Image 1 (spheres, rainbow, N blue to C red):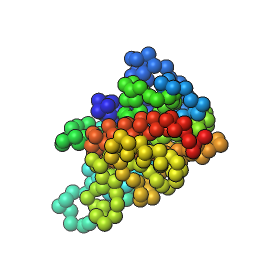
Image 2: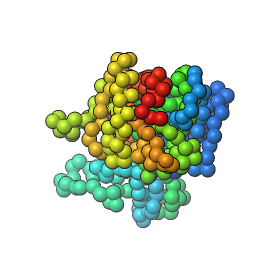
Image 3: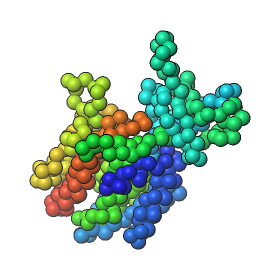
Image 4: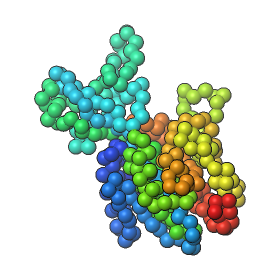
Length: 341
């Protein structure tokens, strides 16, 4: 699964331009002669037969896009103006290396440390330096509307700790790709790789309406405790297991779904932790509201520094996220989906 994460992390896939990631997934499916469906929007659907037939339409989602940048203009000196694709904070951007879909690399401007004036960064004040000698060269290298992402190498940097970009949500994508390619599942399931989550959860809305799901799980990468978080407040931590959402800005998870996850974790000694701060939103919010309503839960891999150039995650959290999903599915089947149907 780490190899899938490495490959996915190093691909360029800003929201709306997920082509590299989509082609990688399709090639992996073709290698094992696994059929898939692709809609006009770029979502990929994989129907995998399990050990049992069920009457419910069961779906598992992960999004393949990441935050990024789009070229919006130039300065006379050849610096590139840009706007964010998805949620980016200006404070984490100065000095960051980026790469565009056409291969052009650059560095986001920053104030040198010897300058005495303190500067509060604003997105509109930042530009990207691509080494151009003037506006004409910058336009030639990066036409208006060219998209880019952080330029980050995937690396193993500590005991079980990996660094890369786009772990939100290449972590979830690696989990479900691993299940499709390498695991048996309890019952027939449709796995969905969605587009444009970072810009409004729109791919999931289309996918859920197309397939008319009854139950859905969302596999995500979520924030983990970082140095600037106050110790007195609870935040998920790396190495403590996958994160189960009770509530975020888009979804309040149904009690029955929570109970199934808890039972599966307890029976199989799988560590997990709660997402309690009511922050962020996932595809789950959109999926839960489609058609007649979908019972939806979210399992996430805790990652430090999401939506920045370099995120960190712990390998065992990734493994346990997959295990928790599969064991919860077994628990649901074993109880004949009591409380769901």
